[in-house]
Image (cartoon, rainbow, N blue to C red; front, side):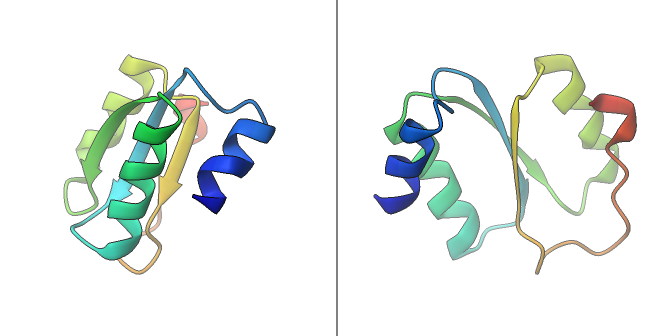
Length: 80
């Protein structure tokens, strides 16, 4: 709830959010937080690096990254 409250305060609501990770508590928290504030969500498996292109297609404004699940260097410069 604290993350959702902060997102509302920062007006990070009603947008598309990306969640980069695998099944873990932090990705679940990110998922449910975005549901609470009314964001659309695209979940990307950190093992599927080519899937990062989907973030550009859906124009995700927010990206949550589960850093414990990242196995390689991520370069998001081409989608920002």
